[in-house]
Length: 200
Image (cartoon, rainbow, N blue to C red):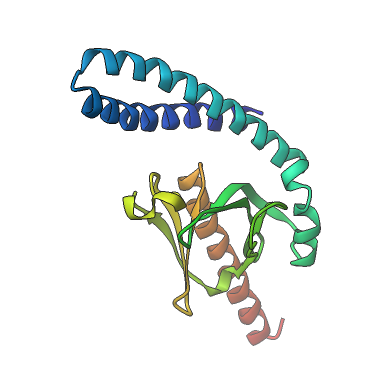
């Protein structure tokens, strides 16, 4: 619950700042004034951010309990053969021009994105960790306004030159855990090969 509260606070700050800057700039340009638009925009941004963060908290709870939008997750994870989930969170697949929301899951040997049950043209992504060559950050990009471009995103590149972008809240944690699990996986395989070579 603490993590859900922390993400909701970050959602409040992010949505409040974005709406304040966007609406404030628009109202100043349209009205030709500064003080009054800023005052109204401030209160409007707080209302919008409050609604957005409360809705986000509701969605996070639904994800954690696998209800409503997210009640397809367990079946899809089972279909992918996922066992031992190490890390998970709500995420958006921001790879294409329009973001698709769902859940991102790190297992002991793969990274899986599952769209929520009402997503249009859903695309499940199942990437074996040994095929991932890079896990890093993408900077904000206004050219990707409808696919999470107002925030930094998780960049995943594969050894086949495929590229995926995911919008997640705990970006640093995701990068750290993916790299850590890849290292653990490759170390385990080296130990296994070494054991066979030594005849053990």
